[in-house]
Image (cartoon, rainbow, N blue to C red; front, side, top):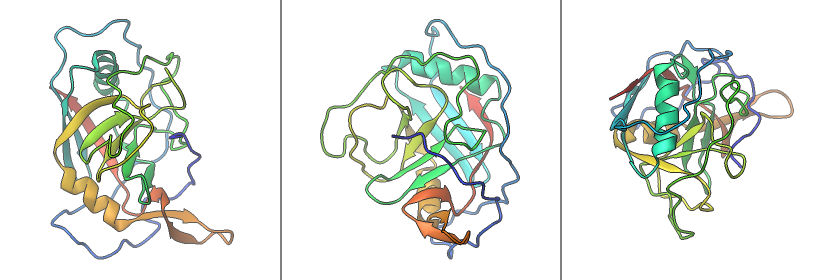
Length: 215
């Protein structure tokens, strides 16, 4: 559900809508690239880290981690320490029905995952209920059970999904950044190759993860 093809759109291809919040974004300079190899962890870390910080061109997004997803947290921590996410663009924004910003694929294909990794188990799945992925939730994107890798999504408004995506943290700083990005909209190319706004596409305001940190 969350792995989709992504159009090649440059970071300065479209003018964003007028600012609606006190968030300022620097120009994104990252490009699609093949990330370096990172060894996949074989067991959960002990102790687990408590927080991930994603330093973006629009500001810091801090995520407090949920210990009920130990394998997921350990795997993402390994990727962060291996600089897998550094200088990568978030590649998908949904604004109709689903309210998520998806990141974690440096290739920008929508199908990128760490080289050589086998998918790891789903953890901390929510109930099958309305708004089971509330605003501020951070979860894993996947293409089916046990296919978790590097792609994650940040929920910026209450969202209902099938209970199939590991919840591993909550945004405790920077939710306003994700909401600002969402207000700028998503874009795609029409049949004539012109950029148009859409409910599911690339971010009109390019979002670059400059660095990520484990603490």
